Length: 87
Image (cartoon, rainbow, N blue to C red; front, side):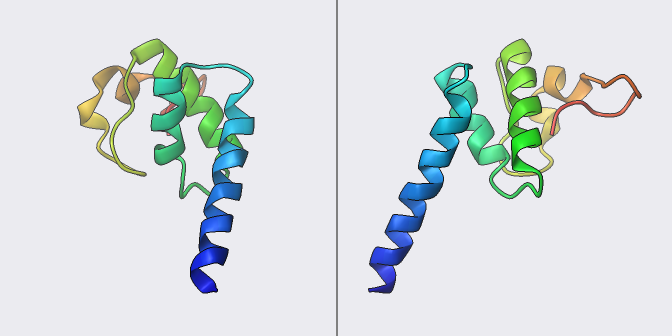
């Protein structure tokens, strides 16, 4: 019973990601950003900026946090305040 509930929850969460990404973006960026932002507190914002960075850089660091050295373009993008633009 618990396994079925878990499976249904995972299907529901994955459908939310698909709805979020339906507005645009490449399948590569959508899937990479879904992983990158999976633990983010502000998921909608994380997905937005990750998608912008991915489209410009064609890469997203692995994992949910850190590892930005894997993608220097992603790492070096700055927002208007001089902080990191990419999650």
